[in-house]
Amino acid sequence: MWNLDRIEQLIRDSVEESLSIEYKSAGALGKSDTKKTEITKDVSAFANSSGGVLIYGIAEFQERDKRHSPEKVDPINRQEYSKEWLEQIVQSIQPRIDGIVIEPVNIDNASVCYVVTIPQSYTAHQARDHVYYRRHNFNVLPMEDYEVRDVMNRRKRPRIRASIFASRSNTSAGGAILVKLDNIGVVLAKDYMVDLQLPIDLGGHISVEKPVFLEDREGKYFWSFRLGPNALRMPIFPDSHVMLRRKFATLVTVRSRDGAITRPSTDAAIVAVYVDEMPPITATIGAHEIIRDWTEIGSHT
Image 1 (spheres, rainbow, N blue to C red):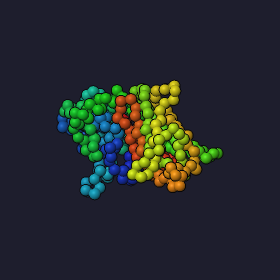
Image 2 (image 1 turned 30 degrees about the vertical axis):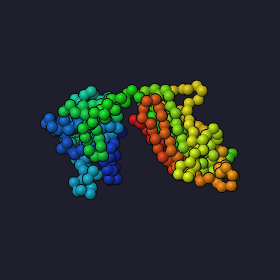
Image 3 (image 1 turned 90 degrees about the vertical axis):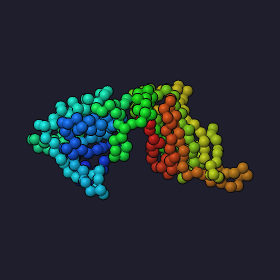
Image 4 (image 1 turned 180 degrees about the vertical axis):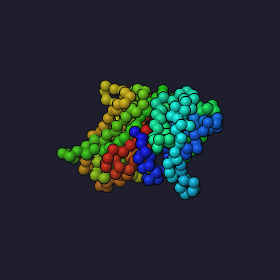
């Protein structure tokens, strides 16, 4: 829920614009075709990208070193530009965007700010000028053909967020490597697999139990193995998750074939997550991060 205190807090904290938030002065609203087209460009670009919040009624600093930071509330005349008027402009985007919320934030009896919350969409949307737009840094840019196709395929494949954690046991010299796959979309995820290249030493001589393969990268060693579904092969339903795990034993030192020299360990894990036909999620994560807490591998949305 948005209110004036929350908007003023953004200004006090100098929260810069980003891929997920943008500020527009009162002058961004207008009844000319040009202004209406700009509104649809900004809103559709959020939906075609990752979603976000668009606030009408906040002026930005004009100085170069403060650009994209909020300066002050710039009230909108609610009689001239009502919530219903703004909704009508937004609804001219084709196809219509589901789930948009427009919240009027009262400044006084005659003026408001409008906070427009835009979800990421499952298809591509055209502005009034029949062009598809996306957000890039602080800009709204026309989309390339492959970008339009990629957005239109969102409904056809899962949206997965993946995280990893090396959980140590409090009662024994062991624990488990955990990989969590969250289905944050609306499409069922049927097949999934995780490739792991894990340091042989995670800050405490952790050795993953066999079967694994010991390999080296530039003279340093790591365990290479895969995590997949259990024998039931349960799919990942929307708004649910699966937890993949592999036990490990601590205080294990890997030595060379003659048993004399401890093999040096890599200091980072390399992870690749494969789900159905979506592009793989990949990351290189420091060993200390995996031990400390859950670390996001990444997501594909």
